[in-house]
Figure (cartoon, rainbow, N blue to C red):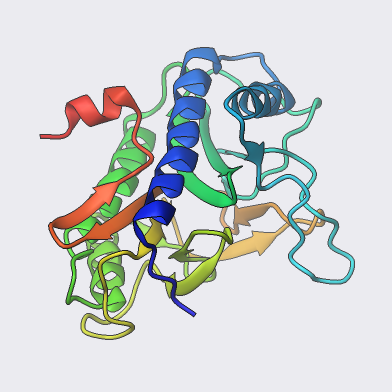
Amino acid sequence: MITIKNNKEIELMREACRVVALVYEELEKKIKPGMSTWELDQIAEKKMRSLGAIPAEKGYDIGIKGVPPFPASICVSINDEVIHGIPSKHKFIKEGDIVSVDTVALKNGYNGDAARTFVVGKISKEAQRLIDVTKQAFFEGLKYAKVGNRIGDISHAIGTYVESQGFSVVREFQGHGIGKDMHEDPGIPNYGKAGRGPRIEAGMTLAIEPMVIQGKPDILELSDGWTIVTEDGSLAAHYENTVLITKNGPEILTMTKEEKSKIK
């Protein structure tokens, strides 16, 4: 069921999303070669809790037999890891890596969700282009996140743009509605036909999240039951924001101060 948030709920969503933005400001300052992904996880959890929020991903159970609840506070996925990488004391970030982080903060009963792909040191031009295209794909979809349009309009815009740049979108995972639950209706694929799907209404809160692969779209799930990697070993990037639909257009709730200053 799609939930339409009232003014009070929207303010609670804003607060949860503000926490997420502040976590990313902290991570951007701290991420560096040589640190473990577990250290990154600890920084994020400490920041969330200091702001009165809890990491919603910690202990998240997908309900599949044999797959344990997610053991960490954030997802950290490096290079060919697409999403859901589990932070570890034994996995270290290296110079030249691209590191995707997915963060969900729960505060006062509501969730904020965003993802960013960080550059660590000097990376290749093609890796940078992948990150740039992934981010721009979000903004291409955002153009259609308006009252009266349909969810398929967002999906179509994302997929068409990514493929026009020579990259692939992940088809097995998608964006989603968000609120009291981390994942709510509607699902928001990163591909599809325009004019299809639920009508977009004011008061919807949507987590729009392009997941883009440098090579073929095929993915594999590792034995931990969580980590998703590219089948051909090519790089992947992830960019996500929680978006509020208003009568005057979409409002991004999870941007950092620096990101807001760069939007014209």
